[in-house]
Length: 158
Image (tube, rainbow, N blue to C red; front, side):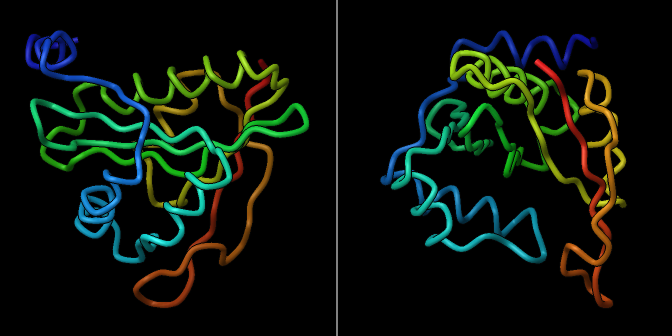
């Protein structure tokens, strides 16, 4: 890991915290910056209301990332991981994913599932690097600029 990467992860001002209702405006702001087809504030609010595992990164006072996971009936589903584009490639997504996997274990999940855009090769490398395996394909799952994009289904046995 480069010095720049390790410096960010060692920054005492970088905190991983449970997402709160008060964070939603910033979460949605980051979502809008990162995705052409973003989740709405209502989706994030619903995730909090039903008790999903929702976490944020703050560096100093600025929100720089978040993750959302549901856990039920022995299965966990990673629903969203997003890192500020200016801070990508520094290990934040990996650390967020590791946090969510640890929470899945604490909730006694046997398996973790997720979908990833076929075009998102950086995320695919992250997931396979942590042991996820491709288990299927959902054709036309995601909205895309020129129609629909496939989702690759990945799973990890805990």
